[in-house]
Amino acid sequence: NFMLTQPHSVSESPGKTVTISCTRSSGNVASNYVQWYQQRPGSSPSTVIYEDNQRPSGVPDRFSGSIDSSSNSASLTISGLKTEDEADYYCQSYTNNIGVFGGGTKLTVL
Amino acid sequence: EVQLVESGGGLVHPGGSLRLSCTPSGFRVDDYAMHWVRQAPGKGLEWVSGTNWNRDSTGYADSVRGRFTISRDNDKNSLYLQMNSLRPADTAFYYCARARGRWLQPIQFDYWGRGTLVTVSS
Image 1 (cartoon, rainbow over the protein chains, first blue to last red):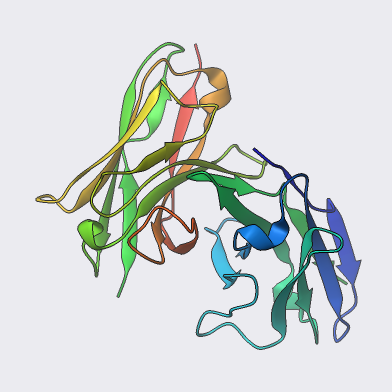
Image 2 (image 1 turned 120 degrees about the vertical axis):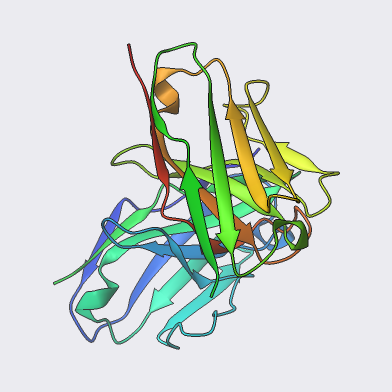
């Protein structure tokens, strides 16, 4: 199985843009969809991106996802940062009927 | 409205067993693939197990394979996780999560429960 590596933490100011990376250790990142989940303190996770770049209804278009085969990584970009975006973000993929999560990135909006 | 409610968590001694339940409202468990995901206190998410809509395909994380069993009862519209030979490392919040489709893959979740806490300690 592969691993997904995320930065432990990122911080940015309100109104700015931040990108969180998720690097797959082996196998092609484009072979299996990547999802992104937001988890605020004390809450269950919720989906912000699925199938690499799709936004569920209700998720603002400030959230976008992409994959880059050259770096074998996925990225979550949040533009026009708001204080309410402060949360933990997890990437997730799968292979051979096994799910894999990244370690999570704590986003601080200061 | 779709909701998922987990139950069955609690304190158990190492080597003991526990069965978690997940009862959804707003949909039927036999229309979707379903999963269990856990989160140790203060730690990240870990996928535990999943099953597709007709139970003919299941998956388990290496850390629980051979000890945990996922199942569902369509008549009771419920999902279960039977956990045996529990270890302190299994201490976590256990979330029930609905997949976006019927099949085990792609593994992706659209609705999550609030979780139930399992504590394994002597």
